[in-house]
Length: 90
Image (cartoon, rainbow, N blue to C red):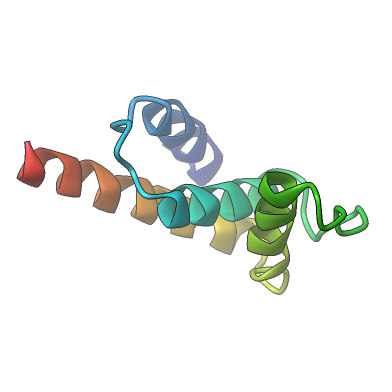
């Protein structure tokens, strides 16, 4: 299985993470996903009143230097880690 296929598989698995997954973890996943699928940030930073969109944008901007392949690999690792934590706390 190639990296792209594995990434897509884990993107589906990420949708099944428990509700109590921290916002910080969700933002990390969001930033890695956007970097892997879109590349570097290509929009302006949302305004101060759009807190959720601004946090997502910041998470994406924070990893701007990563290649798409690095972002895919890090995303897979993070989903695996969150799945293990969910099993351990169940």
